[in-house]
Amino acid sequence: MDRNDPRWKAKGITESSSRPSGRLGHVIPGPTGRVQMAMERRAAGEGHDEGYLQHPEYTDLATVNNMRVTTARIPLVMALVKSCKRNELGEPWLELKDPTGSMWASIHHKAYKQDLFPGILDSGTCLILKKIVVWRPEKKPYLNITLNNLQCVIEKTVLD
Image 1 (cartoon, rainbow, N blue to C red):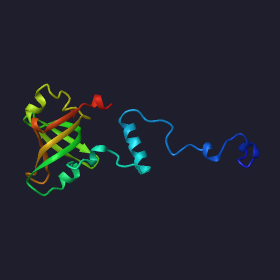
Image 2: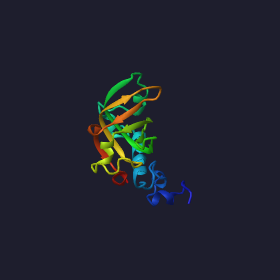
Image 3: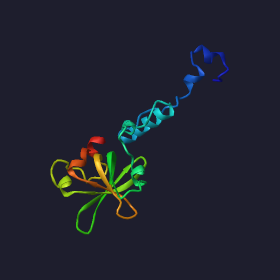
Image 4: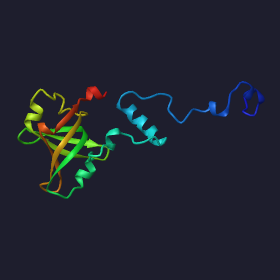
């Protein structure tokens, strides 16, 4: 049926209702769906994509990486565990990432050996770290995670 045909309008079909809206027909489940919704909110001008980025004390990993000091204390960092590798002594090193970048972090044995945070070394775990120390012994800085720095640990199974 041609859109100029009077029967088209007689059926109550308008041109706008014959097109899909700018939104996808469904929401993707899981973390990808949250990213999808954030992108749609951003495109519609409804605000920031993540609520924690608006926290006044939040510092992203790109800013931490660009700091030119030997030692600093960061008030609040939120990141996902990208991977966990062990050094020559068997101590874990976490590669952390956020929307701005990634960096490495050492973790004290009390923070991962106790049963308080069982999934802390798993990839995909979200860490909320408070008053964390960043060290820059040479070119690349790293975070030093202790038990006192762990404000919250959200396991990947909770995020899915």
